Length: 175
Image (tube, rainbow, N blue to C red):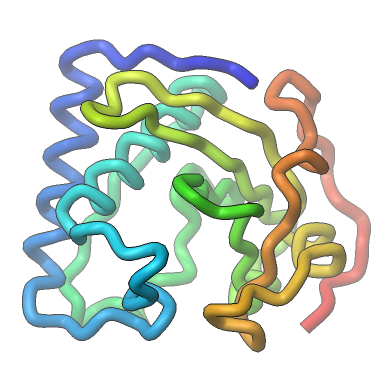
């Protein structure tokens, strides 16, 4: 695990992106897995924490974070864009037993999914837990009880260390 401390301007930028994502989705109905009372968190907090996680991983990797924001009506147009660069997705870990791996992202070549835990309450520090290739995460993950057909959970203890170099994955994509 690697701990990333955010500078004030990084915290402000990630918080701004999170708030903008939250307001861009006002009035949108949450997907069923976001309505699970065991996992429920207010959308504003969740949006800011997710943006903080993305920025922290980008900082660690020294890669471009676009901090994308789009209106709910444009979701289908942009939802396949990875969070960082062209092949890096970030999953905020909160109470999960694993890293959520989404079936639809099997179509993104060589996608790498990183797990990050923004430390509550203020999210000024982020624990980067590790990474897994999308293909491996999907193949070896366990169906999530909240979305068994489209989401699998890859065990946190099987993640590659953040310090381990990411190599190109040669495994076949499973759909």
